[in-house]
View 1 (cartoon, helix red, strand yellow):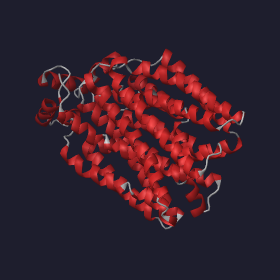
View 2 (view 1 turned 90 degrees about the vertical axis):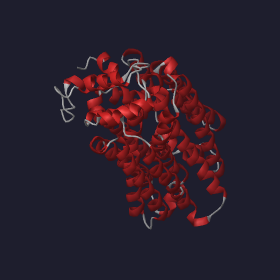
View 3 (view 1 turned 180 degrees about the horizontal axis):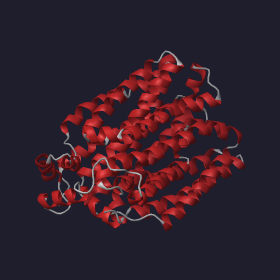
View 4 (view 1 turned 135 degrees about the vertical axis):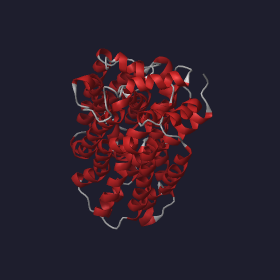
Length: 444
């Protein structure tokens, strides 16, 4: 079975939600000084301003499950594209702090929703043989969006546009948001969602074009119907019950560890961290571009091997890299060596994240839940991820102001916990159909 262009095209369009997710997440990193001066912010209110979008992601990630089931995965993505567009224009034109917070919150709703629906949609249209690589395109687009945000900030900063400079940094995201909205009308609905809604003939057409695990469209439809088993289960059955305890715990664990590494502190405060280490504003923005480029390169490397080596091996490599790089970053602050040692440690850190957690998290969470509760399961995993992201991003400026060394040492300790979890508890899911993963986890 060859990877066909229709499947790849639909995946790339859905993954544009990841690009906007990454851009929206990182764009604020180059504007923290401007925000502080423009709105007279303290360390606490700056942390809240950065975290305001993350509060939106918490709400968006937990609230999007029902719309994704009611409207379909594609319908939910269309609505999220509209929110991205509104947020970009609103942040660029905000007249005061309250208005800026409101539009950042709307952007957060879109990011939270996209973090759930984009990987879910891709997992549901992709055959198992290609699922890891195709869902990882979501992560590739997230890091591409982060790099584009850093690069955009650097270019706009170099143009010396004066008082409106940072407003342009936020406003440019309206262009890809509009493109995302239009391109979604060229993609199909998820065949698994169609079958759950009794629209089998439409699902048959989608499966014929996207490919199947079994080689037979009819056999694939039977497997999906068996996994849904709507004679004994309903799409509205309780989610928080013993039957789904194992995938719930797996999703919550990987999502918590993802943020306890401190990754969002680095993404949101990249320029700020380098300025703490003695770099000037322009140099700090340029170092941010280097971090974003490293993230992109190692995400591509992970995409190339995730379906060959599997999810667990990538997590092992990433965990070890986390511990070594974060320990070195803490040392650089304790000894005031900063500079090149800090830059090197953060480059290794972002490479470790891109090759491990970054590439695996959305693939893994989209795989471990049965078809009938996948929307709610992904919503829970993403909700956990964004709660932790908000906590890390809000507290970082206050904690780092007292001790950069303690901050990175704490993140390193958390990554030791991740390493133990991967070694002892994380199952491998590579090359297994979504329906057979359900059986492997003992879910009827």
